[in-house]
Amino acid sequence: MYAVEVRDHIMIGHSLPGEFFGPAQGMHGATFVVDVAFFCETLGKHAVVVDIGRAHDVLKKVLGELNYKNLDMLPQFKGKLTTTEALSRYIFERFADALKKNELGEDSRGVKRIRVTLHESHVARAWFEDGVGA
Image 1: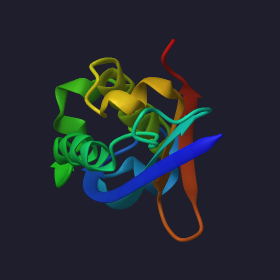
Image 2: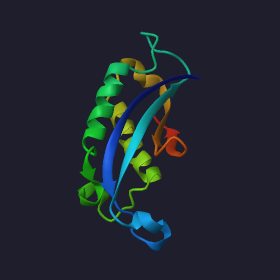
Image 3: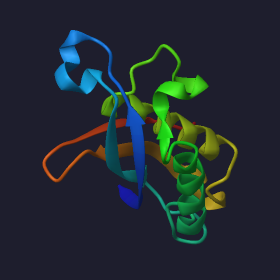
């Protein structure tokens, strides 16, 4: 299995309502290092998994919509918890859509899985991973 991973980061504000979340119930900030990994079994005609430049462009676009934002105020998260796990799924879905639209280059047609990892700190991370494509 081949893999390519791109990385960036975001700074967000949000709250996680409910006693379960303890002090995180209140408004607080978070900085996430975000990794997006693409997996395929065979390489395309250019011997790459995805076009890394295009993958970085999509990542910057997706994260740009969240960076320095209060997630509690964004319509796509209305009534939803913005846990690290939920955010990784949200970013995954945006990349799965970009893959369907061929925004990651022609070689990306072989991508079988995508994993989105959000690093909360040097000791904690969460991810969402699933199959994509045909």
